[in-house]
Length: 161
Image (cartoon, rainbow, N blue to C red):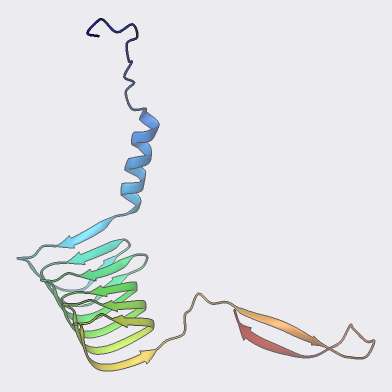
């Protein structure tokens, strides 16, 4: 019952390729943070995500990523990103594909987005403008003549996919 084990379990160290993949994925998900006790005055241009815990007075532009205004965060200015999540206070204009105002979020200003949601407890004071999703491609569909002449197109119709 308490005898020696006949087989030893070998522990292999993690391979270097797994570590490289973790570092590459962490680098691809860059996140800028404005700390809770800080005040930033000026414009911010970021390529990854940004989390606002403190106060920003200025415009924030994100190319690929999301702007997250956290519960303690406050922004006065224009926000532009593919995704904006508000759980703090924003006074200004929000331009996004998707805009989410969470339970503690408050937006005072203009919302320009294709999709917007407000959770119970979230507040929105201002103007909302629906913007068409720019990623939807337009298709051109030819309308053929009902006669046997298939080489001529009578008209074309543009539809959104």
